[in-house]
Image (tube, rainbow, N blue to C red; front, side):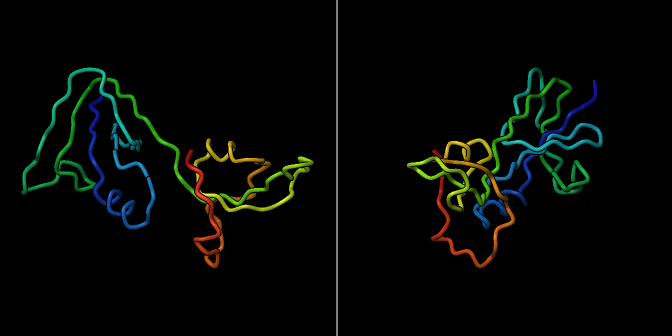
Length: 138
């Protein structure tokens, strides 16, 4: 079985904090393939390795890694983003009644009251004020 290396991406942690985002910060490296997640379960033996100050352990610069040959389960949380959506009329349920800007996840946005359809995501005008965005993180 191929060796798997897991490390924490400090750049992503800083970017998440700076921009108020929730991008995955864990990198699971298997050969040339990188997979990103919020948590990683290792289903077998593993070893934590610190490479010291001389040389990074991985090309990305990681100096501490978890090494394993066991299977891993990577959990990815939904990305929080701003959606432009149509909502239905509350009384008649007519579709396309009004436009709302909502900060939520792909799964949760569909539970927004009178949700109709997603118009766009992450392509919102920079002129949109923060006060006009509804947070929907039930």
